[in-house]
Image (cartoon, rainbow, N blue to C red):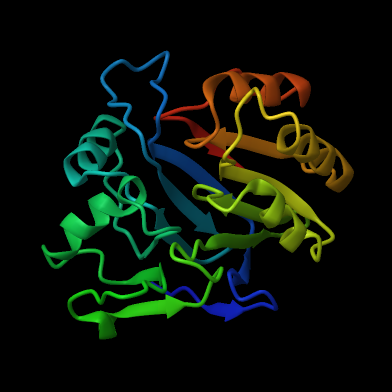
Length: 243
C-alpha cells in the first residue's frame, strides 16, 4: 500500500496530497446531526470523515478527524459496515470533538500514521511517530486537507473553520479550479456577513459540490443546499458521497 505523499504549499497550513486521484468516496462517521434514514447511528457534536481516494492502481484510506470518543466512532463505522484499514489519520484542529477518538486510539497502538497540527505547550507520547505540519499561527493551528481529482479540480476538507470561513476562503483564492468543499464552515443562518460571502465565493469559483457539516448550523445547512440546488437534501452522520 503506498503512503500518502505530502508537499507543503505557500501558506503552510494548506497542503495537498501530491498524487492525483480519479475518484473519492466520502463517508461521514461522526457529525452533529442524525441520519434521517438510519436511526442506529449516533449523532454527537464533532466530526469524522472517512476518505477513500483511488487512482488506476492504488487507493489510500484517510480518517479525517475522529470525533470526541472512540466508541462512538467505532459504533458508527460498524453500523455502516465499514471495515477498512486506515492508512493515515488527519487531525484538523486540537479540539476534543475533533481529536478525542484519536487520543483514545493512540494509546492502544493504533492510528500511529497521523498528520497533526503543531500542538503548543504539549507533546504526544512517541511524538517521533507523528508528522507535524505547520498551520495557522495561534493556539489551535487548524489544518485543511486538499487533494486533487483528475480533470475536476481540488477537493477541500475543512474541520471546524475555527478562525472563520472568510480567512480560509482568502487562502483558497490561489487555486483556479476547486471541485468540492466539505466539512465544518462555522456558519449559522443568522450570519449576515460570512454566510452570503461564502455563497458568492462558491458561485464565483464554480464549486460543483458543497457538503456542510459539523460547525454549520442545521438551518444554515438547509439554506446552503437549497440555494446551491444541491442533489443532497440533508447532511449528517452516515452521509455517503462519491466524487
